Amino acid sequence: MPKRFLIALLLVAGCWAQSDLRQRLSLTDSQVTAIVTLNQDYNTYWFARDRENALYGELAAIVAEPLPDAREIGTRAVELEAIRRERVAKQTILRGQVAAQLSPAQVVTVNGLIAAYTLQPLVSDAACAYLVNGNPYASRWFDTAVYATQRPGALFGYAPPLPSIPPAPAASFCNSNIFPISVRDYLNLTDAQVASIYAVSAAYSDFYARRQNRLTELQLEVHDMTAAAGADPVALGLRYAEMARIGRELDDRKAQLRDSARTLLNAAQTAKLKVLQDAQAVNDSNAINYATGCNLLQLPPGAGPFQPATGELSFCVL
Image (cartoon, rainbow, N blue to C red; front, side, top):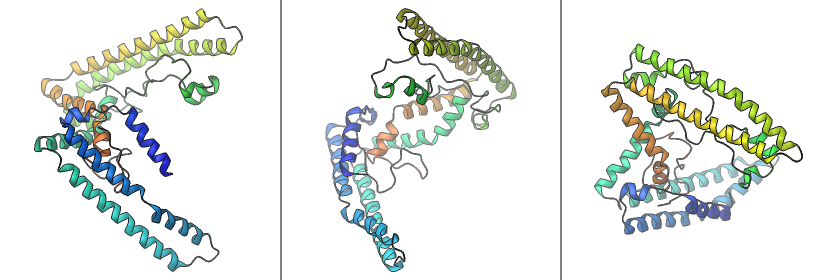
C-alpha cells in the first residue's frame, strides 16, 4: 500500500474517530501525549520500509525468470523474515513502553476490555436469542447494488436518506430453528423458558412477514414513481413516510420481543445477562479497537479483523 495513502488514511481516521477510550481509562493529558507520541515514533520506523519493498521487487523479478535461482530466492526470503522479526520486536517494545504509562487501576480497566472481547461470540448468540440488542448498523431495507444503480450518487452521500427498516428475522434464531446452546448453557435456561422465548420470537416473525408485504408494495411503487417523468412529490413523500412508520413499528415490536424474553429470566439469569449487555456496550463503543490500535492491549490469537497483525502499523486515536 502506498505510503502517502496510508498517511492519508491515518489522518482521516483521526478526524472521524470518536473514542471514549480516554474517558474510560481516565487518561491524563500527559499520558495521552506520551502514548500518541510513542505510536507516532513507531509508525515513523514502520514507514521506513525501502529495503523490504526492494526485496519484494527483487523476488518478483527472480521468480518471473524461466529458471529462478533458488539460492537468490532463499537469500531474500531469509532477509525478509529478519525484517519481520525486527518489526515484531519493535512492536513488543512499544507495547511495553505504552503499558508503562498506565496506572495499576488503568491496567485493570484494559484487562477488562480483553474480557469483554472474549465474550463477544456469546453476545452475538444472545442477540440471536433476542436477549440483547442486535447490531445497530445492520438495518437497511434496500440492496446496495440495486440502490446504487437506481439512484446514481447514493453511495457518495448526496442522495436523500431512506427509511431504516430492521433486517428480516432469519428462521427463529439467526438462521437456525435451534435455540443457541451457548446461551442456554451460560444462563442455565430451562426447557420451559426456551419454549417461551421461541413462542415470542415466532410471533415477531409473523408480524414482520405481514408488514413486509406492505413494504414490498411500497418499494415497487417508489421505484415506478421515481423512474417516471414528473413524479408527484406528495405521493412519493407519503410512501416514504409510511415506510418510515413501518420501520418504527418493527423496531418497537422487536424491543417488546426482547423485553418479553428478558422477563422470563430469574434474578440470577438476569445478572448474568447484564454481564453480556455490559460487554456489548464496551464493544459497541469501539474502545477495544482503539486500545488495540494504540498498542494498549494485544488481543488473543485469532481475535478478529480489527486486531493489527503483530509488527504492523498502529492506528492510535485518543
